Length: 215
Image (cartoon, rainbow, N blue to C red; front, side, top):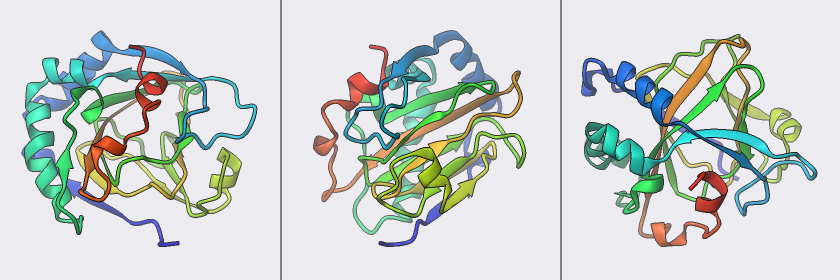
């Protein structure tokens, strides 16, 4: 088992002046709620876990409302990801899941414990969450971990910093996002999928779109 490795870039200089305000406005206007039943091929929740609330702006809507972000995903962000990939990197052909907004509110929401199906994941943080604020990305070191407590038992913890773009391969590393610690807090991140010749988009599990999106 290879250790979990992530790469971070401060990309604020690559983004429009009001990029945060624009994405937060889109999150307010176009968020869609879905109750995730954690039975997907990629789910790593404990047996009997009740449905988990998920809030997203699907990629097809995000592409319409922030075309600059889609262009950056397909261009400069892909080029940055190529720096950390040993294979030729490609972006998603389907806008629905290429680049999406994931949103959490308050202390009652967390993101599902799961593994990724794509070989490189990109996360552009829109909001800041320093230590003590919650909203951390928690990545398990044990590939057999199959619950939040099992991930927490041996993990890496990453605190979101607005304007920072992370890349990582978590196909073998179960991971989730912790709840926020303040009831009035909001966490927003752009999640981006990248693919390679040995792990192409065509291998995306067929149940994921129904699992993740209200559509």
